[in-house]
Structures are given as structure tokens and as C-alpha cells.
Length: 480
Image 1: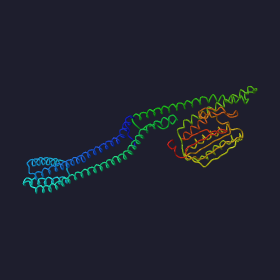
Image 2: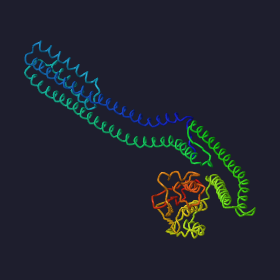
Image 3: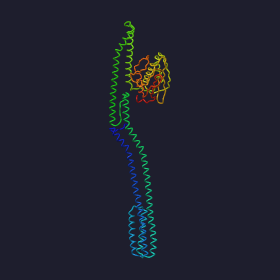
Image 4: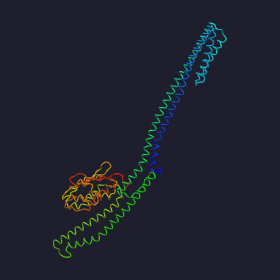
């Protein structure tokens, strides 16, 4: 499925930041709401219950004063005590009214109603009876019962406070659990969102990086397409335009080399044939100095022809370097084929071959593997001494096929190990008897190894020691 990106890379960053921050902001908001609800519950439940309890205790205090003034009136019968009783009763009734206006439970209202009715009954008895010792005794009993009901009302208030505290504790536990599970859910969500937007942001950047690396490695066959925000897509289009320009320049360079080589071949052929005729004495006998000059002309014309052919071969190799015909190849058979092709050169110098090849297959281009191996063999034969030995090893190393070629020649100095893979570079330690090459063999080796997504390296040894690694599986199927 094709992903839809915003118009700019900055917009993608802002959208990613907003979406990643949204769950965290939601978690903060939810926590704030939970704590606000907890605070409201605390204020509503506990604070109200405390006020009711305080009013109930005040009612008990008023009841004590009311009892004292009523019993004093019943004993003494003085009007002063009666007025005190009525004043205390008004205070008591105000306290009852205040309680009735508070948020009471059903049990508290029942107790308060019973308390109020019994107090009215006591007041009626005081109004209808004369002050006598018997009335004082009756009031003691009635006010005792009334005090019991007032204490029950206080206990109901205490119970409401306990229930409010318990409800507050339960709500606090629920809020804590809610916050915990919210954070548990938010963490993987945030990680998933961060990973998703990291992928969305890194994907076009990695595509641009891979495209630039491909251009640097000369992989011009595949068009460049960048999937991402609009500005990254436009950057991809510019890179593709650059790729097409490089393809055009590469084609122009190839045509130039082909035309130049063709134009040089004609006079070179005439020069070589003329030098051959002079050296063979067809046009007349030559003295020693003349024969030496003819020999120099002949050898240098041959060398020049070899260089021109190498230039053409390198141009053809470079032109085909982006294409690969991969299939399952038995590498041991390719090695035997190359050794057999070099048999005459090996016999001429008395060079022995030591093969240590395992049964290794790889998904590769058989012809390109043959060419790179042939180039390594050509170098080994060229630089090996008379009656020397060339060793070829083939083995598996995890997912790679490893090929090693060793000779007993002068080897490659460490400072030159990176330079020998450059086109037209020739080493400085070549023996005098060695035939000069074009300086393109190892460059082609590196081109073909990189095309197979492999590695080539030079190891220490008495002579030259090359090691090549290429993937054995179908990792290069995309390159094909």
C-alpha cells in the first residue's frame, strides 16, 4: 500500500510531534480530571460529614443546657429558670433547623426527627405541669432518653465520616489504578507512534542516501524514486535527472573511447605490419642497430595494440557493470574451467597449481565470475617465478562463498593495495621478466565483485594473496 505523505518534510516532523505528544497530553488531562474528581469527592463527602458531626455535637451541648434549665425550673419554680429554659430551647431548635438543612443520610434524618418530637413532648409536659419534684424526676428520665438519641445522632455522623473516608480511599485506589493502566497503555502507544514516525522520517532519507551511494558506485540502470513529503519527492526527481545526465555522459565517454580506439587501430596496424616487414628482412638485410630499432618498433606496436584492446574491453565491462545474469552456479567448475584455459601459460613457466576447493554454489553471474577469476589467474601467472606455485582455495563462510588466490611472486606493497584496483594503475614491484599488462584486470575484478555485493581484499603473504567474498544466496536478486 502506498503511503501518503504531507507536502513538506517540516510538516511531517510537526505532524509526527503532534501525534506522538497527543497520547501524553491525553494522559496528563485524564490524570488532572481524576485528581480533580478526587478532590471534589473529598470536599463533598468528608467535609460535609464533618460539618454534620460538629452540628450534632453542638446539639448535644445545647441539650445539656436545656436539661439543666428545665430541671432547675421544675425544682425551684422560678420564672428566671423558665425564661432560661425557653432561651435554651430556642437555641436547641435553631441547631435542629441547621441540621435539617444539611445533607443528611436517611438514618440521620430519622434520628433527628425522633429527637425533635421527643423534645416537643418534654416541652408540652413542662407547659402543662406545675413545677414539682415529680416533674423533675420525670424530666431526668425524658432528657436521659433524649440524650441517648442525640448520642445516636452523633454516632451516625461519625459513621458517615468513616464511610466518606472509605469511599475516598476506594476512589483514590481506583484513580491510582486508572492512572497506572493509562500509563501502561500510553507507553507502548507512544513507542509505537515514535517507531512509526521514525520509519516515515527515516525512509525517504535512507532512499536519498541509497540513491546517492548508487550514483557514486555507477549504478545508473535503475530510476530513482523517493517516496516521502513533496520536497523529498522533488529531490528524488532532481537526483533522477542527475542519473540520466550521468548515463548520457557515460554513453558519450564510451562512444569517444570506441571511436578513438577505432581511429588508432588503422595507423597502428600499418605501423605494426611495417615493423614486422623490417624485422623479418623482407625489404632487405638490416645491420644490428637497424634490427634493434625494428625490434623496438615491433614490441611497442604490440604493446600499444594491447593497451587499445584493454581500453575497449574496460569500456565494454564498464558499460555492462550494471547488469547481471544471476543463477545458481557451481563455483568449483568455474575454477577448473579457468585453470584449464590457462594451462599453456602454466606449462610454459613450469608453474604448479594447488586446488583446495569445496563443493560451493552461489547465486551469481557465471561469466562475470569467470572473468574476474581469469584476471586474478592472469596476474598470478604473470608475476609468479619460474616453477612457482599458485594456490586456489574455495570454501563456505556462513552465508558467503570465499575464493582465495595466492602466488609466490613479489606480492603487493601495503601502500599500493588500494591503488591496484584503480583503472590503468601498474604496480612498481613487477619483475623485469613479467609481461606488462594494461592495468585494468584488478579494476574489472573489483567492479564485478561489487556488482555481486561482495568484497575483495588483499592479505599479507609471501606473494600476492587475494580474497573474494560473495553472497551464496539470492541477496543480489534485486540487482539482477
